[in-house]
Length: 220
Image: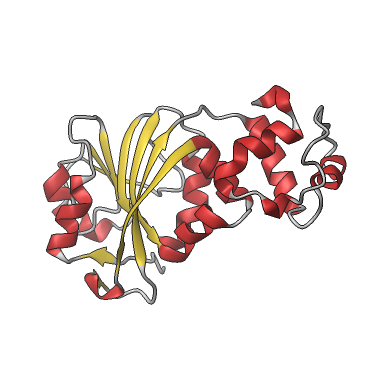
């Protein structure tokens, strides 16, 4: 089974990464501990690792899949396997009491959630304050990925709302249409007359509240 494992091994970058972790905010949950390159600095309360081969390197270990988290609160720290990124966020956005995420993500994914009008971009900007820190070249990992990575901090600012998710999921499917048409196709209504002739794609992910206020003011 390919687990998409790329472990950060550059010591200076590891130290900068862990400097973003609030060690006083517990519990700290690390995902993908590997051989403990990051673990040794943050001393997590729980380490979630799917690969049993690393059991001897880690303490407070739970063998589990990050797409189905066995935790309900705290701060998550991870150099996340890129292939589970979407499913991870679909899971984590539902857990209100996980207040902070300190993550290493694929550069292209980060670029997308900051700039492209997609469902995942809108929804992450709705639930989190997103703070991009720095890029990491492929040769700072082992094995070396084929892409650059980025350190990103996510701070929870809103509670989970299934209605908001459904609205944004539908509206995002019609990103090339005018908002007035997208509203009709999603069986929604708007009490506003301004901006409904703009297209969904005209809104940046950080403008998600403006978009929601046009679509349906009662949810925002």
